[in-house]
Length: 181
Image (cartoon, rainbow, N blue to C red; front, side, top):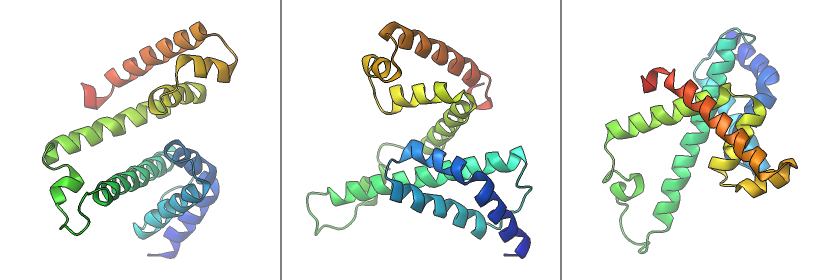
């Protein structure tokens, strides 16, 4: 690891710190966990020897994708750990198929599902901030139309129309991506 790489990471840490934390906050709500993952992201960049122009759009996209990758990997590990801990017989040997769901999915399906999820997040990132929040609140946090309307101080019908418009926009953007062509 060279000095140029660590200087680049330091600049990115300052420039993109709040941006990275906002991405992590989409996945996690605990502040300590967000801080822990935040540092994991930059440690991953540092260990990979990342070096690029900190002010470029390409660097920002790379950091966004690395952040999402760290969050998703951490979530998968937590799910596997919970499955293992919930095993009815704690003295039994670990069954790797139970932990990783290998019985139901092969590696090709897993890779394809990962590409689809990654593409979906990329397209959601292209939406405006309020549109992103609406998508996350409705589909990721399972909030009802009435809850969203109350939070935003508008009627149920306004939220429904906004969501229909955002869904249409999202569908159009997805249809223009490589993964869906």
